[in-house]
Image: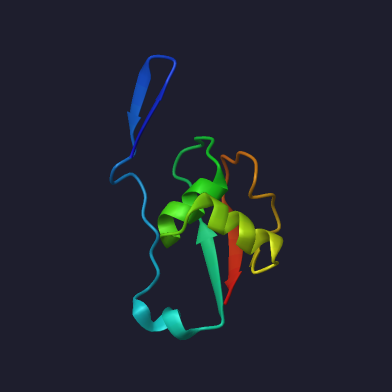
Length: 89
């Protein structure tokens, strides 16, 4: 994934991954996820969750609205620090 802003291009390929611990979690009703940052780079958590879980950003927004994706922090703005979220099936 490349992002371009102010004539600077950032290549995020291989910079992060969502480690699910294997396929054992797929049948669970509730999945708790912790996101840790090695560097304080501001990003939109909705975009990160969408890309990591293979969902659209609109799909993540619907999950938040339905109360099936919850977090102690707002996932709709920008964050540059660690956060957690819970995904409910």
